[in-house]
Image (tube, rainbow, N blue to C red; front, side, top):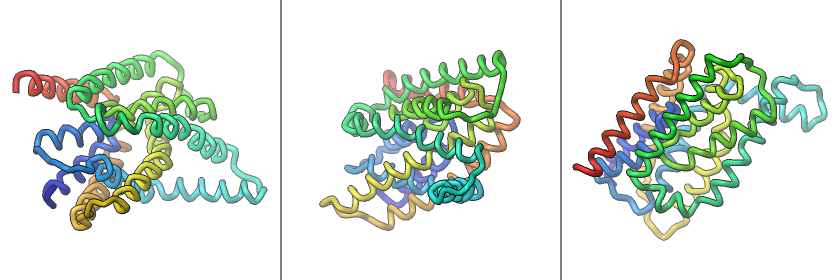
Length: 269
């Protein structure tokens, strides 16, 4: 892998991690389209995700700082804001499904889950999920009240993104919309819910990468990580602004068109 290829993958990761179009799916397609070969592709992708999470930490620092203070006050047996406490516990509980399923499916993620054909199929299935979420959104009452039950359910939706093509942010946003959250609140919770899972997965793969026998080209890693961080900040700001005024339908059509293109290339290219 060259520095330029690392830059491409970093930009792809940063832009697609926070849009409901699947970052892992786009990374697989980008590698296939540009014939980018890498023996430790999943580890490199995890490092890019780690850089994207730094963008979340920066963008949502006030929220994260408030949650950190809530946790510290709770440990010190001091009074806390009930809403912040519920949000904190919802994030922790919502993380459990992805951790369990991620560890269970790790071997599949390294092999058959890297297929462009699978990505195309899951892009379509994800679009159907988003369509249903949008349909129910206009036919059911809305509330921004977070509960532990909602946190766990949205956590299961987030776990769907272990299959490339689904989109972690898209699945969790759709889950939030299906269970009564507004688009904006579902998006905010989706980004906060990503912190523990992606940080843990990224650190695990990063440690595996630096302790393996393969030489690490740090220049390549840093270029990809920086590109993912900058483009991630742009994508977060865009998504938060976009979802305040629009639906998920533009992303639904994009996913369907991309899946059609992948299938066309796969069978006729």
